[in-house]
Amino acid sequence: MTILILIIVLALIFDYINGFHDAANAIATVVATKVLTPFQAVVWAAFFNFLAYWVFGFGVADTVAKTAHTMEINLVVILAGVIAAICWNLLTWWLGIPSSSSHTLIGGFAGAAVAHAIAVHGFSGYVGEDGATHYWYEIVSWYKAGKDGGMPSGVLIIIAFIVLAPLIGALASYLISIWLLNASRKTIGPKVFTVALMIATVVFVYYQMVSYDEILEHGKPRFESHFWSVVFDSHNIKWFLVAFIVLTVSGFCLIFSSLNLHQADAALKKMQLLSSAAFSLGHGGNDSQKVMGIIAAAVAVYINTNPGVHMDAWLDVVLPNDDAGIKGVMPSWIPLACYSAIAAGTLSGGWKIVKTMGSKITKVSSFEGVAAETAGALTLYFTEHLKIPVSTTHTITGSIIGVGLTKRVSAVRWGVTVSLIWAWILTIPISALLAGLVYFVLSVFIS
Image 1 (spheres, rainbow, N blue to C red):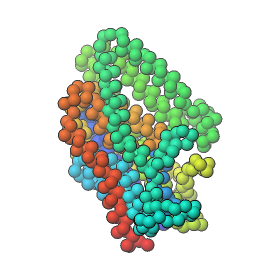
Image 2: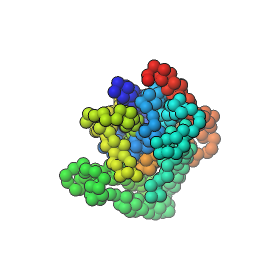
Image 3: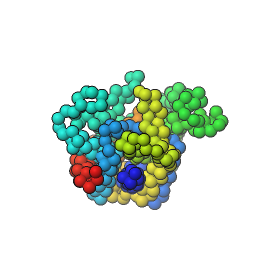
Image 4: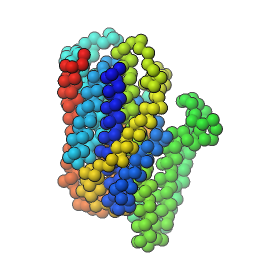
């Protein structure tokens, strides 16, 4: 139990570090464009980090918890993974490198699990409880096909999104920038496109809504009232937010051509508050869930390694299993603590990385800030819907590059960008190696 409590404490410390390490993701552009002062920006971002508690479900947490097979690891594995993740996060923060806290945690967890499998079974095959021959590398959930043709999961999918997340963010921000640029012209075509997009968004979001009966099937509604239960269902809130963001930008596009330069800049600065808030929501919802997943995995491992143990209600965690029809259970204090920790971390800021994100990649104006943050927020909502733990750092960096490309290719400082990409590529393997070393060291002292 002592190790379990230590893991929970360290996981929350990691969540706090994640907050100030990734604070730049949400506030870099609003600080760079002087929409908010640095202090105002971190308070704004922290508030929406915490607000994400009421918006998002636990899909990403479930994915992270199943990075390694919990039936085959012990608490030392998770402890080593968290320690390695904290060390790499602090190092990259000190150097001002906007690396991924998400991939640090995934790499640490997977690396420690592989080290455990090698320590216990060696490199040769062994016979598992199912009677089949297994190997050390199978302890990590590399790939699992999606249920009923849905999105597959596993570490390979997470690795794939190292490339896909910034590409999606870059493409989305490029398209949004082109849309805004065309909307500034006094022609009818962009307005027709905007109205059509507004109608398509309303229709699409309407069909994404879940009914009260569907909410009852998946668990207890938040309110006794049918109406408020539907409105405040986490799935529905997320799609309401998508509609609100798209419709707000669309509304601006309809009047953009009638504004003078001063009015347009003032309106864009106000819209940056919306776009940065939307991104902060996505950051809180995406990154806090990863720590929830680690805590849930730790409790599951503790129960597995101590059969028959009675767990107090505050640690009554059950990992969902769709194949067995088991619904997940997570005490409310866990998500509340995780969202509080990341919000507190964001309040602490992270000014070295703010400088890199806000000015070194490309010069950012209010126009580009709105496009980048809107694209980043929509990308995070999309990947969270698919239960994929992506890097908010990669996403917003790709989005900032996308808006830079609308000016000219040379507007992006590719020397800085290439160094960031190297940091992204190396994060998972370095975190995995570090976690493996930490595991072997801890194993000497903890049996």
